[in-house]
Length: 470
Ligand SMILES: [Zn+2]
Image (cartoon, rainbow, N blue to C red; front, side, top):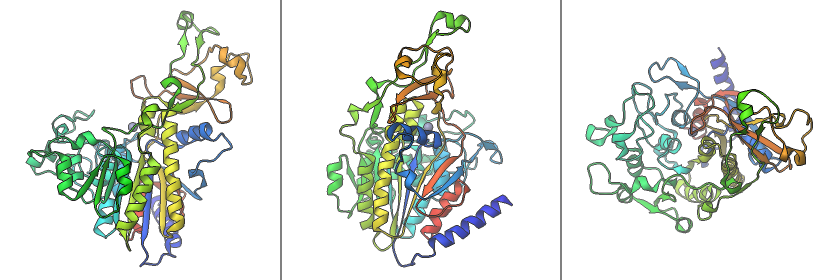
């Protein structure tokens, strides 16, 4: 009943929203994914960068929806799993089909390839592009342009070593070319038809392709790719050749870091605090601001790569148009490291990339912009009162800096001094392991075109498919 109603609302909205499109005019879809960018991560970035009354670029988008993230169990695909990873969610966005964690555009259990929006668009004559700050073989980009049973199978060497946390899962042997498969993710990308792919992950292309004495990069070049390693060359490209831009060995450097590279930290506890509850026996981390990451200096920014992609794809797409996916990957990766400044900088990069997309949409009428997250993440904004002595009822920075806490989060916290000149407490408490974890919350979808109020993640694929008339 509710699914049917949703489908009806979606169809009506799509019909209303897109009825003005002339069939002969080029169409453009720009899908921007903030990896792990749920509402909590957006709110903390907004508070820090702009202040509570400030606005991000994504806040200016007139249409909004809440998106349910659905994940299947690999053992029993009729059952849901409540926390996703980037592989299964990117598969859902790319193919409209729900699968299990770790899978790249393949079905749970039966391991069948699922056709992606990039493949459908290419077959219909559109240009296609992928831009990411991760390795281009990482889960999110990979799910749009390759098919494999496990996300770890990024290159020919890892086909033998990649494993899943789920020990009942098969590795990648079935996908080896020797076994009639398509080979690793890097090899599939090198042999593919995507017009433009920009990001990190060069190391996966300098490895010998399976059963050859050629690097994967050589195979990409033989397949017509211009393989480039710096943005100056990118900016000189004319769009006549397919482009594979590899700007970092692995994940690209991030824009911001905590002062002196600080991340979230445990409150320091005196022995008395371990023995029994008593006031003023724990010290919270000093407040800090974010600073520029010196290692980012020579890294192409996400907005720069996005602009280059828009300029080149509009040429290659001609009268037809294009599909472009842009991912800011390290919102997720920095949240795993409990590094709030890292994730804030990467969310800002996505917001700046969106600015480029919005300018493009002003100049090109039939442009659908979608901004979403694949899944939720660890960071939460928690009350300052946990960080204050009991008697101090109002936030007072001078007193606060010297204050001791008696109540605090069992996780790690960072105290950020925001654009409002207030302290914001960011908490990571999903686990006590070295990497903080994803959460199972619904995620936002923002657009320049009408959206239904509540959706499942697979419907984002349907919106793109209908817009491009695939
Ligand atoms: Zn993650």
